[in-house]
Image (cartoon, rainbow, N blue to C red; front, side, top):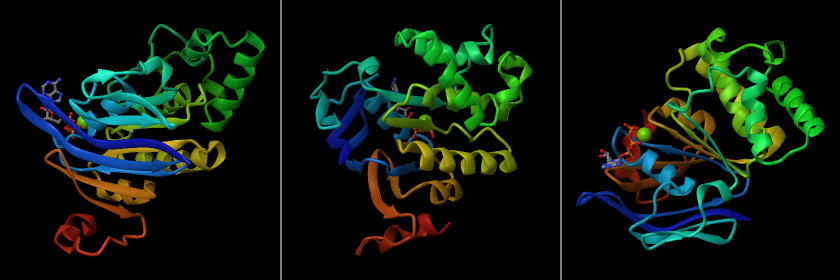
Length: 240
Ligand SMILES: Nc1ncnc2c1ncn2[C@@H]1O[C@H](COP(=O)(O)OP(=O)(O)OP(=O)(O)O)[C@@H](O)[C@H]1O
Ligand SMILES: [Mg+2]
């Protein structure tokens, strides 16, 4: 089943084209990595998908429903059922870990017993059971990232968007959380859209790797490194 469809999307900021003719189809359960250098338009793709911005031309569909087209947002972010973990999206420091996880569930009017059940289950999944009553400033960077991931996943999103969410962590922790992410993906079966500029991360995570440069898709490859024919001029990047 197709979950996400970008159809020839373009986006311009102050006369500067930052995304051009972006077309991408994502099937349910896939792990798509958007890879490319700084400023190539990766976050713009996620913002379009999340519904924070509208495409100037072209359209975006989620689960077969048109959510944005030709300068208009048709379905607002809160109705798209997407989870988000962005680098700059901090946890609420005044709330406990439990409070952070409970916040979105309350907003969705999930009853208390179900909230508690889901929090317990999710903390076990990210191996943070012992920190239920801790506050974010008492946690390490990696622990905070795990809670940020848990906060997104507890709402059972059909799609999880991650924007350089592990980039600030040291290599060992990054690798560890990558492994956890793959395990969680296997257990929960969401569709993952993962933005990074790191080739190693990209090949570790992606079932599909979308290489971008200057607002355009240069190539779409699979994790096994099999590139479509005629893409050889673009092969250097993926080999790095
Ligand atoms: N709100 C905005 N107003 C004007 N220009 C913007 C805006 N948002 C993004 N841009 C421009 O669009 C281009 C793409 O930005 P985007 O944030 O998508 O890049 P990115 O690939 O995520 O980069 P990075 O790896 O540094 O996060 C950049 O040139 C950026 O300056
Ligand atoms: Mg970005």
